[in-house]
Length: 429
Figure (tube, rainbow, N blue to C red):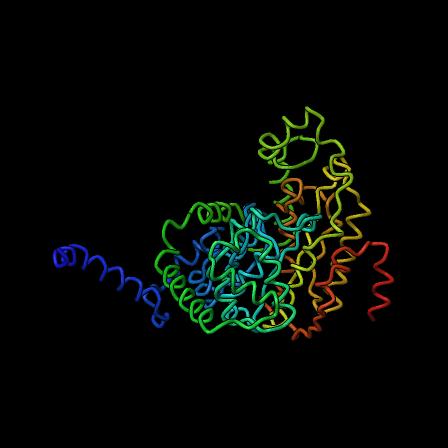
């Protein structure tokens, strides 16, 4: 009976062992090279699998793509979108879009963990959305959607025993997604307490990382969406043959005018009709943001994780602060004073640590056809971004000199009242 069972199940067991062995062994060969066509597709796909994974990003960044960190703004493809302009005018760089709706600083920090070699001594672009900095910070369900065991396992295999990694582990433990693997969760608890990992934990994490890396190489390119690359190609056809800022600015105004019609907020008619028109009739949106604040949030500490990572890797970063549609801001009661205070606070966090490449567009919310909807750049807004991004990436830049401070992880900084900022600056000189 035993021999019969062995004959039946033996091959299955052996196959399972072989599959496990292949997945668990270190990745030492490039059996899944990414073609140039697949790189172009992945760079604009905004695919969650690409964001969670490693292989696609790593290969494309090695081949000269530049990471563009952000969130939902990347999905607003029009002729002035960074990916469209870079393709049409054969720029020396191509954006690799990292982020989609719901991705914020904590997600981006872990995205960086398995592309550190491609960030070291390189350049990057990072969009800071004021909407991230709400009272409770990143939504747990949104973080969970982009959570990657691969990125976490990779981070845990090279973390250092310092307060920064301790904070990252503590923050991750607040997210339900961190409990998706019992052994990873236990390792995170050790890091959060400042304890060393056991030999078994290090063995498990290395094995798990190898397995997930192999899986990523096998599967990351399967069902890669192509619709965004098609959009880029179609939008590029609307651009003139030769680059001219003034000509493109006029075109942006024309396209914006045609796309927005005559709705009261001068935003895309498609967005207006699908997302706002019906709700506006109820009156529920009038002044509904009057008590909203972006000045006190755990997001300031999560954002500091990203700054710390850029500093460790000597990454030269261009930060973009987008505006909010001024008509929408006024209608919803969103405080202009509060937005200015947020701007001052984020500037201090950046510049006091040596991050001086900032494209601050926060005062452009009333420029016609600058925004495609209530909070996202479009047409002339994208062109204004390009005016800064292109020279930053195309030309040699001065070496950054960072001076990272752990004070930006503190509850005091997260919850610092705007009225106390001047005194805080004076106390921390």
